Image (cartoon, rainbow, N blue to C red; front, side, top):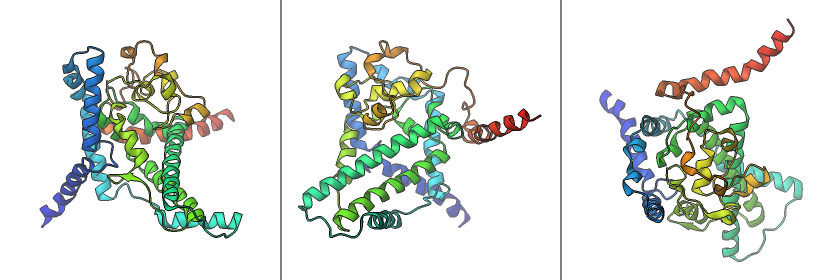
Length: 326
């Protein structure tokens, strides 16, 4: 009985990880992964690169990549155990947002539009709000020193593989969970106010059609050594895999750009968009936080160091202020 109790979270974690491969809402869904492999082969064929480099042991079995695999498992285990809880639920938030709109603009009859238009608007609103809040949180994680210490875990990856998307500190994972609930609650609340409670979205295999399109366009290549640019015109509107790889560069001018997930318009507004064409030698990009950064070279450092550094970042201005009076 005790053994079953100890092993049940591990079995549940294994089931959760397996679910990632069959859930179209997950980045490593089997179809997205298969398409990414096909696109990678196409890129290597076009550039006349050796195919064996696609599965280079130096990348896929690099100590940093091995950390990514373990972090993926540990974070899923923490999720199974409820250590990373969802603090808020969507329904009360949606009702609250809708009520707030009623207080400001008054109660009105729902708009009488064809159902397919309502579904289309709701699908688009969900996607845009989700994408903007992802950008905003990502931007804040970089700009607030206290939060940057936790986001450093993601940027400390020395090589990129599709699993690197899951290389995140539990504190950051918690923030993104709260963001998801808030953004979905806001989208549902707005559309509930205008169209009523019968809301549904256009989906493909259970995923928002825009999210599905984003994922089949090579989202798994964003964290990879496959340089795929979409050209200047498209990259002014959508973040390409190459643009996100630039974001993982250890150069300060690069790490503070291309925060967007799917849409590039937010980076344009915040004046932090860099096109892939501005990097003349992509192979010269060094991924990570520089050779001198070694604090995340161990799993213990990855999980505990951010807490120590975050507290220092939080209290150092206060300490400096106190010292200035002496």
